Length: 306
Image (cartoon, rainbow, N blue to C red; front, side, top):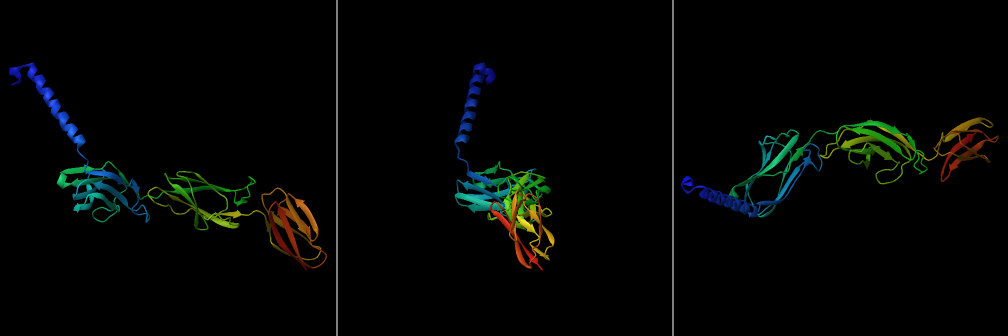
């Protein structure tokens, strides 16, 4: 036929075909999507025992009808059917996946997708959202804690314990003090500064055991690191009780990062920059108090003279 009518007929045929294809395309563009407002969990861990132990799949149905929702692996094989030809009303539909396959076992770590089948509309839609299943906990290695004695008095000397660490993957470090959670570091941060406060913002004087854990985005948490002891003090005397005899010499260690310390004992006073005070017991037996102070901070020791 085209040979009979020549080139003009061929041109007309091509124009008509193009017009039909364009019309079909425009019709498909105007056709409303059967599902909208899709929200799918990006990352989860079915073994974490936490709030991210399930993946959530949410969308809205434009029409009432039967729905089948399946989980596909990276090879597009169905490993689990979450909803099997169930009649659902118009509106919001939400299902969750616990990370297990059809046999009840936890699926391997990897990427998974969601397929929605709507038989009434003869539509099968594979959502573009990718679900990452990750059950591998991160590893955290404590590199160092400096200094081991701090006095958070904002004098820029030993105000905080600087804790350095490394992570095996993207995660957040969690600081625990005496077994209680205190600080959550920024994502992939490599350092935490601890200024002697607990999780409620209260200052805790004395020795404390610090440990770290790592928490990734899926909810997997690492075991704790070995504990490191850090002492929080402003001004301390050691020992805090001295038993001596009349006229005997004795000494008391000063634990502080303050430059000058004032002391008072048995009517005598002085200033020292040393980390130890050397004194002589009074000639009269009894109980005496050694007092030291620097700025707003003070400490004392009982001296019993026999």
